[in-house]
Image (cartoon, rainbow, N blue to C red; front, side, top):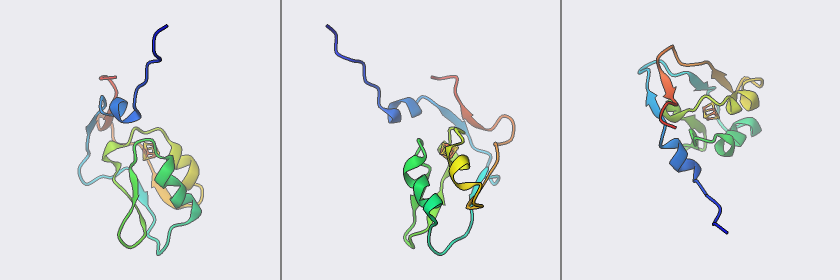
Length: 98
Ligand code: SF4
């Protein structure tokens, strides 16, 4: 019997490549004093770990590693906590490496 094959998410994400569209972020977090429950959920829901708390306790995004899965869009766009759009053609995640 062989041992089960395990792959870490971080190792799979490392196979992706990104072309950053400098100056044109495709996801924006609405300015806030303290995070809504929807924004707090993004801290653990994003598979790429794009959301984090800053020193003031506000949710920020670094969308450079975004895999465009749409999870955050489902959670926080309806409440207006984020604005979400696809990157321009040719930019964003490139999946051809795995
Ligand atoms: Fe993270 Fe997916 Fe939202 Fe991109 S679309 S920021 S990978 S949850």
